[in-house]
Length: 347
Image 1: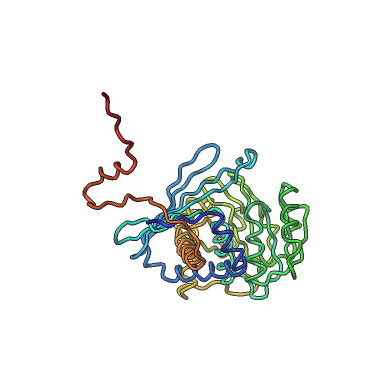
Image 2: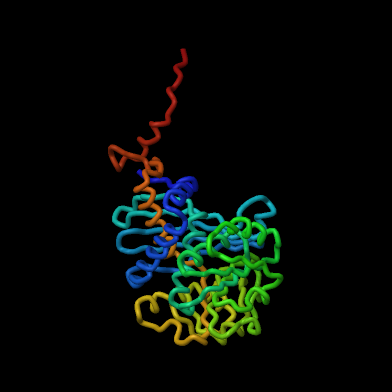
């Protein structure tokens, strides 16, 4: 049978363990899988674009498990009372093809995205970074803010969003967090002043220039998280040209990331190579580094395995008959008899 993990299950796991601990476990899980990068069968995600947004499938597999994520990105959904991003995923056994886990991935994606940002910043930001600018204060902002505060020691957050209500929401949620100073700013430029780390998580599906070269200070590390599909960017090309740029999976990032603006031979480094010591990360305190993050299927593979394990430990998850149970595996037709109504006899 298949285990179904719902949004309520994820909320119960976080309530029991605390979000900082779940974030820490997520970083560890993603790091461990990135270190064994060559073991995975990888491909760019399959995307179906429309004027309103995008729907994507994200597959990956190793020798034991196959996973995929279904995820959308529809920036105008909030006007309809719907989330911009919604997702679910499957973890299956490679040897038999049996779907083992069917899980929500909307909450989990926000956690894994924040964890991936922290994983990159651990390698690329200056060790004593304490101030972060957070540009885009929507659905993922709390997860990013708390991940950087609890796991990387960020003590000051400088916030900006074109929607003041989004910043007010973020301030409301984080106001009670001990040791975290919150500064609401009037512009991106103001938010970036004095920041060690910059994280951009905007949602508009367009080529935007959220961060321009004149805003960038020596030694900054930039997490460009919001540019994640063709035609959607956040960083001015000049920011990339003046920085060392790191990506998840280069074939996907060239199409979807901020580096889609750059020539095909523009140099980038896949992050797994830094984790395994095959490539350098930050070289000196003055260097500007960019993690051009688009979200890659391996991160969801790690997340699915982690939440499945945590749900099992907590006694959560519901067993469902997603696949028919057959006495004779060659007799699929017999499965229809389970729902058959008795036939009426005509006198």
